[in-house]
Length: 519
Image 1 (tube, rainbow, N blue to C red):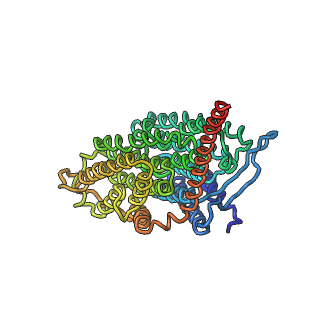
Image 2 (image 1 turned 180 degrees about the horizontal axis):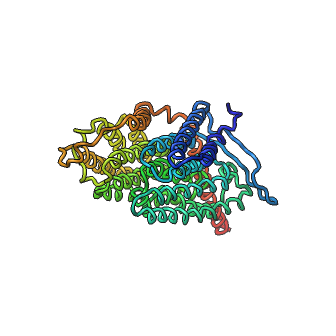
Image 3 (image 1 turned 90 degrees about the horizontal axis):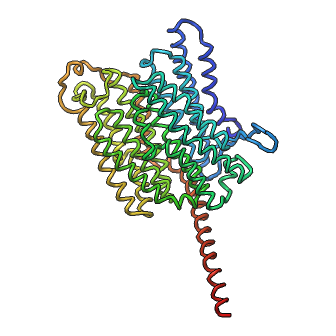
């Protein structure tokens, strides 16, 4: 199985589906039906192939697996390789991307009626770009995928979004593109320093301390916008509110993880001294994001906007865990990203269910849905509790590990993060109470229909995974642990080596001065 070009199949098979959709002929209804069928079939096949990655993954090594390498571009002495591979950190992000693509296409089955062919093409192209980001082991290849995500997402928001979709799409595009320009300059600097665009070469290279700081800031400009961190988070609520339901699912479920993944893959292991130097800044920004956006979420009247702000708060936990830079915290950050990918995707699907029926997301417009939609109320409850971090759900595992790891580094930061757990429970319980409990007072709510079999089928795998991750987290932690431990050991070794070197620099001149004085 390892001899298959499995990563290439998972990455580029969606483009084969795109080719089939583009060749579809007939009237508009026939083309739309064929586009839906081809897109769903292709995404299901890609997801099944991605499961083979998990089945064949060796949890005892931190090395990259399923590696594929070929010469791609050669200009003089400048060579760019097609280099793909995954480790324990990237494995589950690939699975998350392929799973959510299937669910998004299924969720859009009866809700998108205009330009269906173009809509399905956009999602399949987006899947290729997302998977490519987590598999790329060459900087240029990574950058191509990283920027390529912007185009289909821009179209999904700008064409099939809400009333202010053009504003939200351009804001999303410009914010993320501006940060990425600086990361391109950093990639060029890494190439001139190492003589290679290979990510593995850069991981094993000792960058000068001063250079590390500049490279860290350049990558930070790109990854912080993607997370998004405070204060560059303002594009996210607009993008979520205006995006179609499936667009919000991918945006929250996968695209926000690109920033956190970048910090774990590049910033921490490649620039350990700079990461240590900027840790107080990262802790401060994370604490502000966690607390401030939780209060902002409490003030929202739009369901999507409330969940969008909750996403920023949860990702604040992630950045906090990453820069605590110990095994528990980094493992917790990775698990928290996976959990948030499932839970936030599910919550946006939950909002999409009632929006498709009444075409409003105003919290005050609802109330008493438990009476007419018991299955919906149950599904909403599970994901709401997972978002709060109830033990037995996926949300608890990541937050607990992050708090344990952060406590070892800063008790103040841990305390600030812990206060946000209370705020998170407040705004999620507020949302659930207003929408689900109470009595029905509006006539249109009396006729609202509960979850359909298709909607139940979409929520089922998310429910299973959220509970599975909460009850038996080791099945997810086992592949992650070895890679994270290796990363943390590298960071610790680099920081200790730098500390010893600085001590020598201080002691030697002092000894020389003492000798001179005695003479």
